[in-house]
Amino acid sequence: MTQDSASPQGQLVSARQITPSLHSALLDALRRALVLLQEKGPTEAGVRELRVRDWWIVTDEGELCVEIFLDKGFIENANAFGGLEARTQLTLEECAEFHASLLETDILDVFGDALQIRVGSPGGEPFLREAADFRAATGLMVEVATWTKHQNRDKFVMLLKEVSESSFVLAEGPHTFPFLYNDVRVARALPFHPLSAKPSRKGKAKAKAGNGK
Image (cartoon, rainbow, N blue to C red; front, side, top):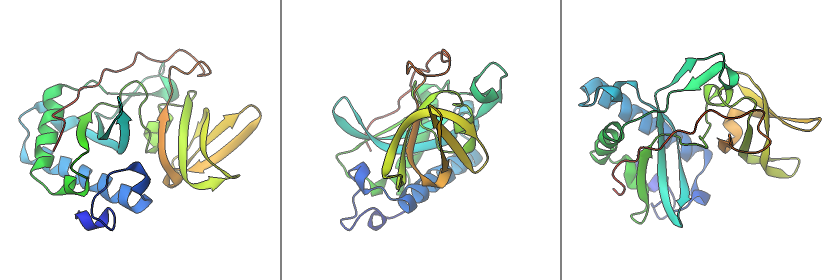
C-alpha cells in the first residue's frame, strides 16, 4: 500500500479521510502481514493464533492514534452473548512482535507522522467488523456508524437484535433497522451501557505495543 492511496497529499491523518475502499485495502494488508509473520515463524508462540480484527483512527486522551485491534478468534460458549466468546487475552510481547514486523513493511507509510500506531486487544468496548464479531455482541447495545445514510441517519446506538452471515438487525423499541456489514463504517459493542440486555463479561485489559512508527 502506498501513501498515494490515502489522500491527495499521501498522508492519512484523520478518520474523516477513511473511505470504504481504503479501510478494506489496509485491513487486508494488515491481515496479509500477520499471515506472513505466522508463516515465517514468530518468536512468540501466541502470535500464531492472532487475528487482525479491525483498525481505525481514534482519539485517546486527546491524542489521535491508529488502533490496530487483535484477538485470537472465538470459542463456542453457551453462556456468552450470541454463543461465542472472543479470545482477547494477549500479551505485550505478542502485540510488540506484530508491531515490529509492520515496521519492516511500507504498510504504515499511509499514516501521517504525527499519528501514534498502537497494536492491542479490543478492550472493553470492542470494535465489530465481521459476522462473528457481531454475533458475539448479540443482545448488547452497539454504536454503529454507516457509510451511507438510513432514514437520514448514519449513526445509531441501539440493541443488536439479530445477526446473519451477511447482515445484522438493530432494534429501538418496536422498530428494527437492518444493515449490511459492508455498509459499516465503524461499530463497537457497549457492554457497560445500562440498556445492554444483561451484565457483560468482564472487560479485557488492553496490551499495547510500541507506540509510534
